[in-house]
Amino acid sequence: MKFLTALFLNFASLVTAQEISTTPTTCTIQTSAAYPKSSKLPDPFLLANGKRLSTKDEWACKRAEIRDQIQLYELGTKPAKPTVSATISSNKLTIVCSENSKSISFSTTIKLPTGTGPFPALIAFEGGSIPVPTDVATITYSNHDIAADDPRGRGKFYDLYGTSHPAGALIAWAWGVSRIIDALELLSPATTKIDTKRLAVTGCSRNGKGALIASAFDDRIALTIPQEGGSGGPGCWRIVAAIKANGTKTEDATQIVKGDSWFSTNFSTYAANVGVLPYDHHMLMALIAPRALLVIENSGIDYLGPVSTYGCSVAARAVYDALGSKENLGVSQASHGSSHCSMPASQNPEVAAFFVRFLGGKDVQTDVVKTDGKFSWVKEQWVEWTLPVLV
Image 1: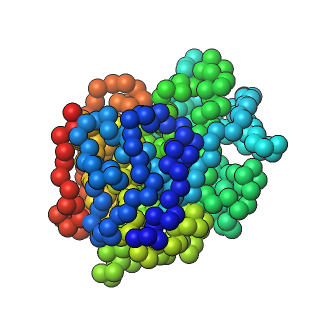
Image 2: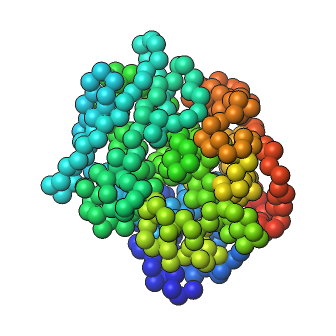
Image 3: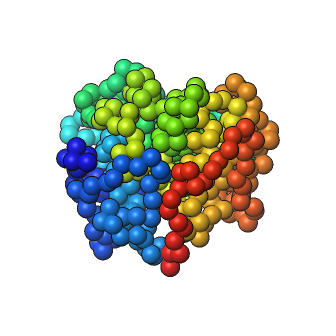
C-alpha cells in the first residue's frame, strides 16, 4: 500500500491543532505505517506499530492516530485556534476570528431557560430537531454560514483560510463549534449564563454528521446526539458499501463524494476502495469515548443505511466497554417512514435520559441499544478482533 504511505503527514502537527487532551509524550506514532486492505472493520485497539493496547492510558495514543488518519484521508485538517474575541448582546453571541491579517465574524443566538444560571447548553446545528429539556439553553449554530455544502470553498471558514483549503465542510463546521466554545469560555458563565463544562451538540442528517465530527475533534463537549446522520456520520463505509453492492438503495462513499463538499478532495481517491482505509467510522465515534454519545437513527430509510449505522455504533461501543464506560454510548433506531429528521416519541425517553445524566448530573439508566430494523446484524461478519482487558 505504498500509495497510502506517501500521503502521510507529520502526526504531531495535526494533533496539536485540536481542542483535545494532550497526547502523552510516551506515545510513539508511526507516520509511514503500511496497512493491509481489509473488508472487515479495523481493530480500534491496534496501534500502527503493531502493538495492541493493554492499558487505558494507551488509548490516548490510539486516539491521536485515528484523528490524524481521518483528517488525512477523509476530512482535511482542522486549523488550530485563531485569535478569538467575542461579545454578547441580549441573545446574540458574536464571534470574531483573526488569522494572518484576515478576520471573519459570525453570530449565534442563545435561548436561555428561566432562572439565573449558569445553565447547561445545547449547540444545535441549524436549530436542531430533538426535544430539549426546559432547563437546558439552546445555542443555534448557522453552520452553513461557516461552510457551504456547494460549491466547495464558500463560507467564512474559507474567507479566513482561503478557498483552496483542503478541509471539507464537515471539519469546517467542527472548527466553528470550537470557536463558539472558545467565545463562551472567554466571556465566562457570569456574562453568558452558560456552563461551559456542560455542553452538548446535535444536528440532523448532514448536520448529524457535523455534530458527530465536532465532538470527535473537541473534548470540551460533554454530550453528543447525532440524529439520522447515516453514511459519513455514524455509518461505517465498509458496511454501507457491502449492502449497496447487495442491491440496497443507500448512500455510499462513491456517491457522497460526487455531491456536496463535506469531505476533503483527498477522499475521492479512496471512496471506491474503502477497504484500504486504516480506520472506519466506529473509530470516529470511539474518539468521543468516554464522553457521552447517543446515536439516533431512522431504521425505515434505506438511504441512511440503518444496518450500517447500527453495526458501526455497536462496534464503537466496544471501545466504551473496554474503557469502563459502556453506558455512555447509546444506540436508538426507530422506523418512522420517510419523515426524515422528525424524531418519534418512542425515542424521547433515551434522549431525555442522556440529558439528565450527562448534563444534569443525575444517576439514571442510559444503557440503551435498540432497533426495530428489519435486518440482521452479524457481528462476526465484520469484527475479527476481540475486546481487550485494559488496565
